[in-house]
Image: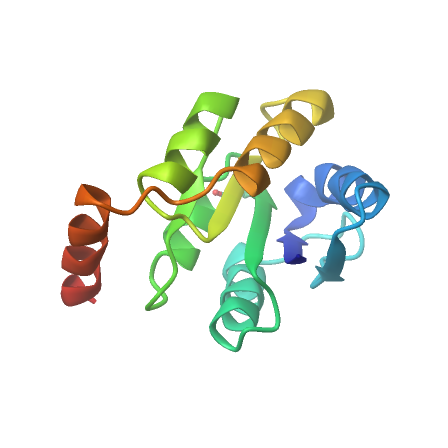
Length: 144
Ligand code: RB5
């Protein structure tokens, strides 16, 4: 499974920790930056990961900023992207099983890297349930 990963400066440390974690679990990681704690603008990085998913260079995306809010707003502006800001593993499970989320968003300034890793593991192991949720996803697509 190929994962596109990006952050802004506020998410940089967590992004680096997650990169090591994902590589250790044998995921293929496409690191789209940022590459330091120098101030950058989160929409630029949300766009890169969204494009990787749309072009099928990656199966899923992970975005990290300070709160996760800016990255969520930015990624969800792009057609076909369903980005979910998850603070707990249960949210990650439901984001995949019910919302068919293709991007996980995490708040680098609000959670530990241990909790973030747990959330990532759950997000990447759960599957979309389809059924009634399929109809709702179609309605989302019609809103694009
Ligand atoms: C950067 O300071 C911060 O505003 C950003 O990482 C994010 O939290 C925005 O939503």
